[in-house]
Length: 294
Image 1: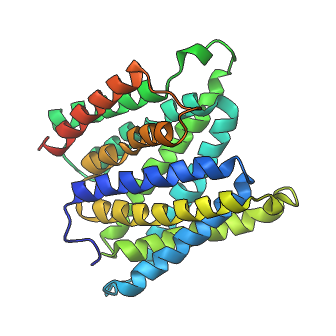
Image 2: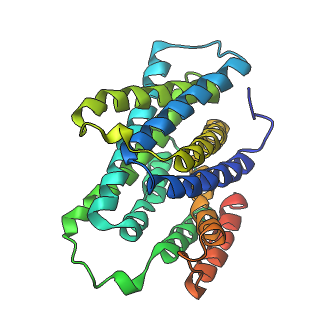
């Protein structure tokens, strides 16, 4: 199978790297075109690459309808429902607050892994996961903006629901791999499912939204979509043979990479502070605990 020669923890770190490149490209693109158009392009490219990866991979020999169903569930919970709730959260609570609450995916995923799949949670892994989650909150938190806008408490249920949906995607993915041992096939099915659901939702959006696009933004979006495709392949390859309690915390290090990359490419808009550097140190210490926690 593709990428099975690499250790799951290495794949998780590679996934974080690819995803960080994708997020920076998306940051450049989304201000130049409609979110609906951007989501559609991302869905098309990731689904297409999923089938390309599967075409060059060793064909899965144990394809079952039940396994396909679980991979479709991954597409529904993750790329469709999780992403939709995340976008809604951005408009309701703002980027920083939504990103902070979204870090609870580490807790949900760990709970599902321990109580649902019987994975082991050691003290170093637990502490490392907590450090990564806390450092991510430190990095995205902006205390200066906390008093400018009063947000109803129940609005925070939306980013929490997004985190829960992604955790369900991680759980259903592990179940699917127990039936069909192919990360490329799982990526193809799950992303094709989310694309189909997105196409179904297009008529319910305002007419003309797909026409809002920019040439430079489009090419950056394509670059981000390709990078995200490789990130997805690395992530699900890691999930197939690794433990959720280790893979998810390591993959969340993408936030740390995103912050430094946005500062490097958009220095006039992004600033590095002592809080970011402290968060980076805590994240690295947490990653060490997760990797060597067994």
